[in-house]
Structure formats: structure tokens, C-alpha cells
Image (cartoon, rainbow, N blue to C red):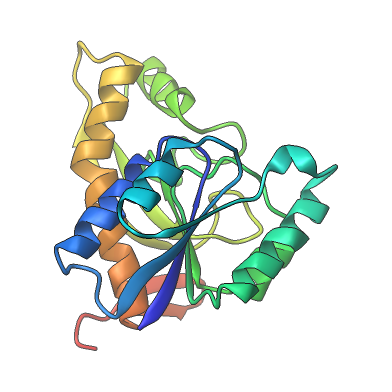
Length: 210
């Protein structure tokens, strides 16, 4: 059984989607054993507590730079025997020492169809605002591996969501979460825990036969 560590910074809606999937028995060969927050008072910690999951606060504000924070977080991950690490609304930039220590074991969900609307500066409502400004007809969400390149790791799963003419960034954000993020993140985590993801030439392939 793989130890899943979830990294959070805020409300934890993606964490809740993972917890709900776990409670339904949909996470194969894995279990959430710890939630680590970069902010004190994050509601995601309440979600963890309400489900009997260990919560730890490692405040980013207590560290002078990304490197020192990343080293401290890496020590925590090692102490918690992390097998799979999930970014679930984790808004802190980490030094590459973390992803290098856990190659192809760290995943993130991004609220757009990578390689569109991704990279530095594309997060939260900003993504959906840019989607609407460009007038694209389809957006969605992407689960990808975390590497030293922002939103540049191999893509595991994607799901498309319709953009409606009367959308606001807020309504579009909600629909992307409900129709895409909350569905494909638990699926990808389950596949990773079950050893069903293979990497060839920096491309992720899902092997359902495993």
C-alpha cells in the first residue's frame, strides 16, 4: 500500500475529491497518510482532520527562500515515508531538489489543457480569465508529473470542458473543477499507486493491463 502525501495551501477541494474517492474504494494500492499545508489555518487541514488523516503545517512565511523551505519539506516527506506526492491547490514554488528526489512520484492538477494556459503566472482564476479573453471554445484540466519545469512534466490524464458564452471566470472555474479536476486527479493518483503509468521519452503512457 503506497503512502500518499497531499500538499495544500487553501480550501482543499481537490483534497476532498481524493478523500471521497478513497472512501469509495477508488484509490488502488494507495492511501492518504498525511496532508502538509504551506499555510496556517488552511481549511484543507480541517478536511484531513475530519477524515482521520494526519495534518502538518510547514508555513512558507517562516523561511527566507524557496531553497530552505524545499529542504525542510523534503525532510518531512522522507520522514513520512512518502511514496506518492500530490499537489492539491499547493501554491508554493519548490526548489528542484524535491522533484529530483521523487522522480515521477509527484503529480499536480492544472485547470487547463496543457500546453495551453500554463506555466508561470497561470494559476487559479487567472487561468480561466485568460481562457475567456482568448475566446477558446473548450478548456479543461490536466494531471501531470511535477518536474523542475513549471507545468512541464509528462501529461498523465486530461479532460475537456465546454466553455459557455455566458461564463465568468468563477463559473468556468467551478465547472472545470466539478467536471474535470475532481474526476481525473483521483484516477491518476490511483493509476500511479497501482504502477500503471510508464514513461517513455518523457511521455506518460497508461497501461491498464497491469
